[in-house]
Length: 187
Ligand code: NI
Image (cartoon, rainbow, N blue to C red; front, top):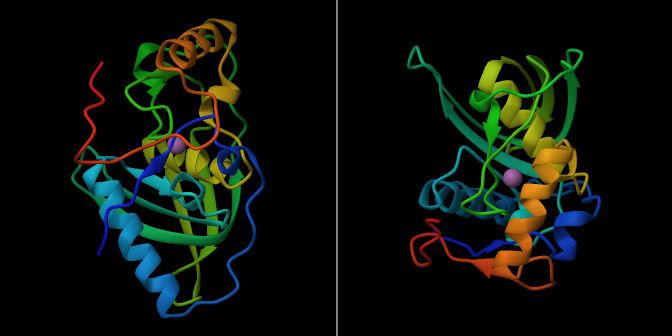
């Protein structure tokens, strides 16, 4: 398995609609292994294929909730239904991060519940009902497949913050990436 570099906001692959996964073969299985390893090294709780430079409708997730229940999986060609997103000013405990905007966190309201329908690494269809932070992860990763970063969903205050971070880090251009386990991204 291989840890892969993670693309940073501004790279075109992060801002386009990804293409369906067509082949559920050994190559896909290897890719998924690499994505899990990359996510674990980052570390993160979700990683979408565009973040490693592949415009494919594919993401991985790994979340352990407060009760210790672990949900780990692969979603290829996902569909996602969500409960109505709440309105209002997000709280600090709704701060979200993204490995493609490394070291930054901004608060964002998300739907409390989500229903994922997707294919696993073998092409088998499955459904996953999620609430709370797992629902948030699914919404975040699903967005990646449509070229949407959580930064695109922030309110005016958050948008200002993320724009500052992009400027400060000289992000927002093509071809930037960072290497989990190698680059130190603590701010
Ligand atoms: Ni992300």
